Image 1 (tube, rainbow, N blue to C red):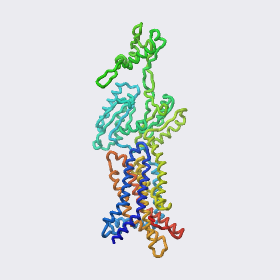
Image 2: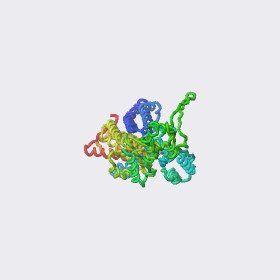
Image 3: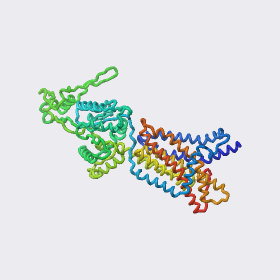
Image 4: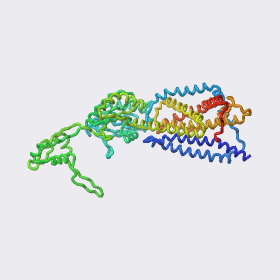
Length: 627
């Protein structure tokens, strides 16, 4: 009796051992494209892949090695048959008549499945795209840009006015702003660029019905100050964008060329083309010209009269305006350079600079205007270069629309202007859109390679290309469920959604493999135990019914464990849920449609293929998977 029990456990383990290994291997392979991503998407999602990989390897070893041993130790006494298990009886009571009807009306079932797939095509085509779903950081970064020649005093006054207006909004808890650059060599911000961090109150303290977009619109209307261009983002994503792409908004059009003046003209032309485009917000041209400079030209024909040289005048200008290091003071272990220059009151205006007294050897002090021309000229406030070319930028954020369609329409508007660009000038799209294109192009290369590898694994599992194609037929329906869910929840396609689909793809194939193993083995035993030896369509359908119904509980357990485990993420509302929900939504709902397909449509496809084989050859091939 003991030997019989151990023998049955051993045979049962062998029966599904290869299928379990193949399913786990396919799931791991399907997740591998994420490891080949680059940039911030790799840093964000690779820990998820490694965690899942090691967890599945551990679970596979436990299932194959440890579980059979534990069964021999603890699975004793009377074992309840599957047909008498209360959970199995309940689901069989629902599932049995459905699968019988579908096996009877195969063409109708396949037509309905095909209609479900075709119906999702318009949804997939019209699906919005973006790089990553926006993570709500709980705060805003207000980055207005004013005229490049703004003075320090005016920038300070403007900053104080803006902070008071922002603080008047009820949802704002604290405001902290700065103009110009921080006290660090890595911050090259001009005085005309203001950064204000807006800390918002907890959402339960907001006015009823108001959203973050409503707060931004209210702030934008209150901060409509002449000469100031408003821009809103979030602190963390702004720093990531600036470090990775050099763009401080969602999207930037970089214009390269040889002349800053020409680049400025082109940038303003492009701006006119994009004004009024749906989804484009905070549109402005990064200031390229408009900076004010004091231009001092030494009059060489005059300095000789006073016994001066060019070096003498340059030395005076450097000392008077810029300051000259005269000595170094030492305090303990610290050294401080000491510079000397004229006081602020002597160099505040152009006339005061012109009247600065230059000391001569024989004629005493003379005004600077006697030996030099002092004028205010216009030039670039900051010279940006990239790839050894001068660069200007047209910047905008995307709000109220997905990034992919917004940029696509913007490209269409600029298409004619791009064709007429002068020789030596070209443009490129940057910001989050640059990351989106990079990630999409990489996935388009990696995913087909992974599909080929999975196809090879399935072939070595079933030794039949026909059965491989039957398993892979579950993928479109799984993707259909994800597409319908994205449309229902109004979620744009992003790298996070792609991760959800990749995870879904592995589980869909896994459940398909298990179902096909049960169907193959059920058909094998049905034909083997059939007394007459004559195989008919009725025998095939009975075998498929038994293989599908009798193993219903383990298949449902495989799916329900994944769905129930992800429910907390699906209904989460806290910080980070913005990124995790787009992964979970297509996975959960795609898994539901995939399960329905595997339980209903896949047996029908299998029956249809086997009956066609019987009609063509007069017999069917049948074998156990472990053979």
